Picture 1 (cartoon, rainbow, N blue to C red):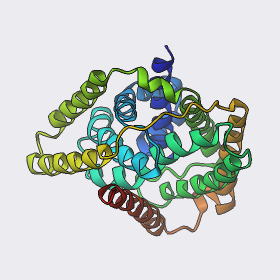
Picture 2 (tube, rainbow, N blue to C red):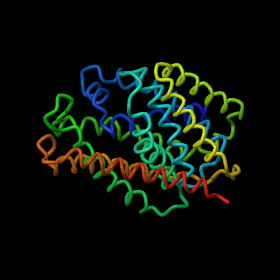
Picture 3 (cartoon, helix red, strand yellow):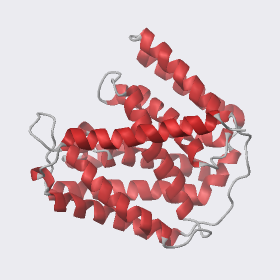
Picture 4 (cartoon, helix red, strand yellow):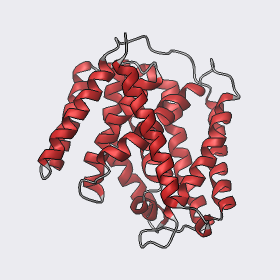
Length: 301
């Protein structure tokens, strides 16, 4: 039962980081429209697919180091972009590689499902979680400005609308982090054959989605195989049995509040922000983190 709960919570966290903290226009608009609970639940269901991939990877190798979490995040990102996105709201996107490496790997997985859960455990100092969450909230509020501007796709959310979005994504990401803090060791209960089966099923769906782009599909398959090999290089290590400190999850409220504060201070939809510079800075740093993780995996002794 806990493994099932962990799977569902993981899907919610990936949804929160991937669609709502990222402020993906379509899902964000749907989350702000009438009938939004049904839209959020439907998206949550789709995110059970990349969540299954993450649980499978975490079963095959203990995510001891940051670079393992980043490599796992790259694979989860490709599942998200190659399976969920085409099924939900558009054809196979050009962002297959770019968004997976620059956002899903460092943010969704390394931050959301690896680092934050560790800071929710009793062996870490109590100040560490707010020291990370409050600046992360400021960064999230600043990042949301990329959806402002004069283009037809711009959301230009009011402060009230952005606050509503924060009220959706904050409990989602908190739930996922707390679940991994408390139940990570339960991943060992997943049979190895089930883990490999989940990865194979994700790969099969991805192949079907990408058949219209055979050259791109072949290149992506080689890239995924390389990253999976780097991820599997270290031997499986022991799992962390440190108890979680659930009361620390209250600090996620500070994450949501600081997001709103940052958006308000910048001026929200009226912000004089160069969106291209913001996107380039965020995605360049994310890609560099992924490349550093690949290098660390390749040079492992």
